[in-house]
Length: 381
Ligand SMILES: Cc1cc2nc3c(=O)[nH]c(=O)nc-3n(C[C@H](O)[C@H](O)[C@H](O)COP(=O)(O)OP(=O)(O)OC[C@H]3O[C@@H](n4cnc5c(N)ncnc54)[C@H](O)[C@@H]3O)c2cc1C
Image (cartoon, rainbow, N blue to C red; front, side, top):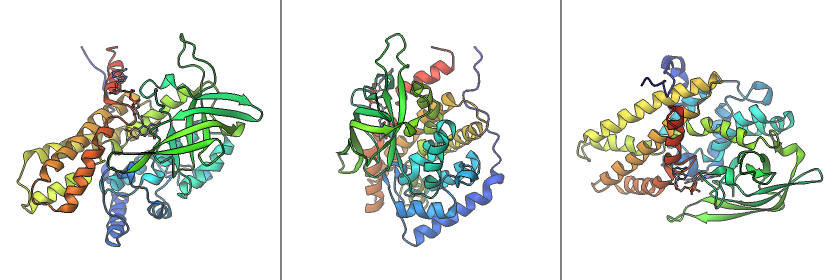
């Protein structure tokens, strides 16, 4: 059987972005030296630092792909890729703006009204507007079409009622895009009757309850919508097209380097410890570095495909399955290394990585479900 390529061929010339990459590295070294942040794992989801976000905005590294007309920088996905990859590899605290910059920007550009673009894009570029993702519900994760949050027509807009769960950063973000049912389920067309709404997380009818993780950290929330009013101006895209809109965001959500670099600071630290002979040499380090190098190539190739407006759902699923497995393996490798004399800070970060590890392969679509997407891409389902 001849298989089509699953991931686009990498045609990215690293020399074209070398200067930008060096600039970001230099900036990060200065920030670290000034004590502006301490590198950590899973920083894109857990390390919320609005001051750091503001310093990135000041450098022009937020909303890089936003057109100049909306206050952005009109740059390419590849340039954004270079900046975000360096930030993630350095364990920089980028959680505050991550979701807005990664997927709300391209979604607004694709589906947002002129009013919504003008309202949100300039503020995202300035690092002043943060978003969450309002998809999952208590009984609806992988099978997203089963969401039960209801959107009912009321004068001037819609009233949303239901519960969203695992909403990262909802307690700090300004808004999220909620997926809701505006029509009862039609068993023959389960994906019909769904719509998206931009919900003000500080508005009336919205209650945010913290979900505290086993390690005491708080980044998840439950969001209770009790008739929350969404004006017509904040309907996102078209009523009834929610499923198509949500699925078109997924390549942005799944293909980036945050799907393999969440624990990279630990790999870096292991290499340093080995070179200083505080850790015994291990060929596994080289294997993990090789996996990261391959993922870098694949993820960059997808950034180039997104730039060309090519569909990239299947390659994004490949990166996410392979990448999240790799970052979990790095966590385990570092955790085992923590049994040696590597210092308290290393052990603390390795412990945090192991705590976070189960989430790597779940968030943004589980590996089991993504293998189904890949199988479909291969024509096997
Ligand atoms: C760290 C983290 C952050 C998150 N942030 C957000 C957020 O900000 N906003 C948001 O909306 N959601 C968020 N989520 C939720 C996440 O998207 C869901 O956890 C995920 O989609 C899985 O849904 P579920 O937890 O309901 O599991 P389920 O869908 O109930 O799955 C349970 C198990 O069954 C397996 N399974 C389910 N269906 C199939 C199938 N068809 N074939 C094979 N196996 C299957 C799954 O792989 C999994 O192992 C976050 C999750 C995590 C861990």
